[in-house]
Amino acid sequence: MRRLTLAIALLAAPAWAQAATPETGTYPALTVTPDPLVDEFNRVEASSVADALEQLYGLRNYLPHQFRPNQTAKFTGRALTVYLRREEHKEGSPAQQGMIDAIDAGAPGSVYVMAMDGADDFAGIGALMSTTMKARGFAGAIVDGGVRDTPALAKMQFPVFSRSVVPSTTVNHFRFAGSNIPVTIGGVRIEAGDIIVADMDGVVVVPKAKAAEVLAKARELDNVEHAMYPFIERFRSLKAAVAQYGRL
Image (tube, rainbow, N blue to C red):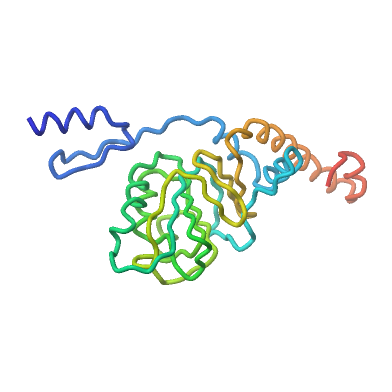
């Protein structure tokens, strides 16, 4: 009866939420739900998305310049938010169980977004979390603090934007305080499901309610700028290009 109950529970759960257990011995394939909007954002540059948000809505919705990737990176995805509250304690990793659960429940294509009060000297993400996110098909991660185990992350090619690289841990220094809730990082509000656009220029946050309009404007800006390159190469004049295309 117990095995039957377990089988029914697994069938009822989303494919990406299923996990191998000693009893089942199964490792079900992850099911990726198509997200055409996210796919299209991956075709435009983060700078064009930032410009589109500012021109359309007056929003400077990009993270501060301190956020840099651990390796060459370009990714987009829906934000899965987690908040860790600064608190000294002796409970060990159980105090962060909610963070672990959030990662294990994350859908393929997610961008893990960890807010930790700008804790530059604490590594919020390391090899264990990154290995899990990589295995689950996450697009990448953003952490409002440090990252560690950088050789392992480079080997697995999992991109993480962080404020710093440090060898420390959050265990016994932070406590899980919520997931899939609004968080603020570097003055930018991020809600679960917002679209994260990240490349070597930085990280831009697109509010989900504004995504379609921002994408259309970003495409327009991208197309105009890319058309200007051959014009400039031909006429060797930025002034002429700006006059021709009406932008810089």
